[in-house]
Amino acid sequence: MGFRTKQVHGGVTPDPTTGSILTPIFQSTTFVQDSVDDYMGKGYSYSRAGNPTVRALEEKLTALEGGLDSTAYTSGMAATVAVLLATLEAGDHIVVADVVYGGTYRFVDQFLTKFGVGVSFVDTSDTDAVVGALEANTKLVFTETPANPTLKVTDLAAVSAVCKERGILHVTDNTFLTPYYQRPFELGADVIIHSTTKFLDGHNATLGGAVVVNDEELQEKIAFARLSAGLVMSPMVAWLTLQGVKTLSERMDGQSANAMAVAEFLQTHDKVEYVNYPGLADHPQHELSAKQASGFGAMVCFEVKGGVEAGKRLMDTVELWSLAENLGSVESLITHPVTMTHAAVPREERLAAGITDGLVRLSVGLEDSEDLIEALDRALEQV
Image (tube, rainbow, N blue to C red; front, side, top):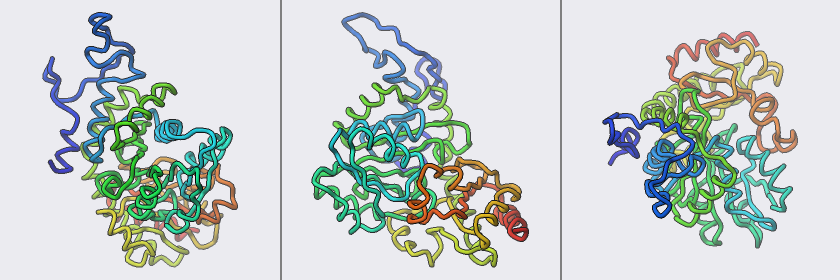
């Protein structure tokens, strides 16, 4: 079954009672049991442990990623927290990419360490650096590629091979490229995390997350962590996300084409210091990106000449692009990572990782590319 067929039909069937073509929203806290002896005979007891609407989304995401099973969460951060809670204990050590979503950095740096887990932030685009950071008690390597917000690319196959050789879990965040463009299980990863809030939803409508695994024992551990911490996605969010996923491939193709056009425009503009977009032929990781993914995505980052103040003027004055923290939606968004998404990362570490004070992050939407470029051009001429 092809990807587009799976994104429409995977995990869902017409409701057997009414024939409804859409999965019903089972907005119920609890489920009545037939008898004590047949407890959970219908598969559900309490929505914190599982819900039919949420399960439909989980089955769809499992099919799209080619995994064994999935769990859905209240947010992308909740998904990340569940994986770490399920797989780590005091005295363990983990390696985390030096460029990750700011919330991931905050949880690892300010909470995991408090409970006795050692953390090393490493440039995972350098596989030798990953090897050099491993310790005898390293249990997990966490990557994110392309990274938020610099779009640095990690060689997933190389890192996975290192992890498998040493019996270490490789967890990767696939939010930016989605299973439509990037297939981490096929490259050796063990766990895939998504902020479903982003491209999977695609409409700025929901807050959610997901974890996909290809191992039954891992699934049991992570599902138990979700149950224990109360991190399960709501039925309404699952239902809305089910509808968004149906158009994932079409949105990704359109948004990525727009992103390429925007990146090419910015690359030639005399007010722009530099542009990072893996789809550009002169991007230092273009070949790796083309090798491990079938598309380059809809995220672009760049820096305006004139430093922080020039970048702020651009973001405060540009039309059509909404100044907001989210990404992956059909509406184009512009973000200042230093004050918004990555404010929790210490300045010295941000700069070392390439998250400069003047960095501008673009999430390119489905508007006409000519309109997006014209709006940027007008704003750049005013800085």
